[in-house]
Length: 93
Figure: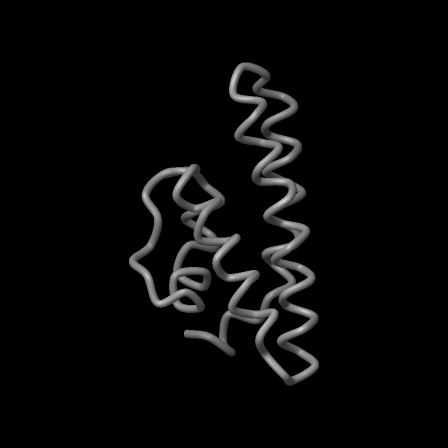
């Protein structure tokens, strides 16, 4: 399990109602699912969280594409993690 999943996996799984992802590809799918779920929210903080999730999803998709470039992948995962950190886990756990 990658660090980003260890840090944010429970929150994302809670939003989607799925088990915590065990690999990066399934985590990317969960984040994308969470974006769609959050887009349905009517409260302002849900919209803000959806925006953060959308940005994280973009970085995660790009990171998967940089499998052979460790520095680029690490940078993209770091940016995704920053956006995921904007989500208040207490709202969903």
